[in-house]
Length: 94
Image (tube, rainbow, N blue to C red; front, side):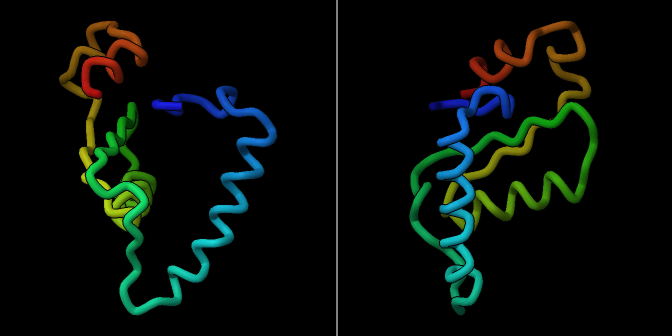
């Protein structure tokens, strides 16, 4: 899976694997250096249609903990406001 746009894109097994992996990250949070190389060399694009400082910050922190490069995209002033679909926007930016 390249893009997760909706929870409906996931099957029950996918969700269970995500929750199992999240549980494993409890160990990471107890380390002095709280980073793992899981996404080193990868880019994560956070796309939000509404301003949400807490959500954006938590997503950004999670991606950085996985060693990803993070881009935060704000829909205001973009092609999204002109009617471009979410799928088209993601494909353009990926």
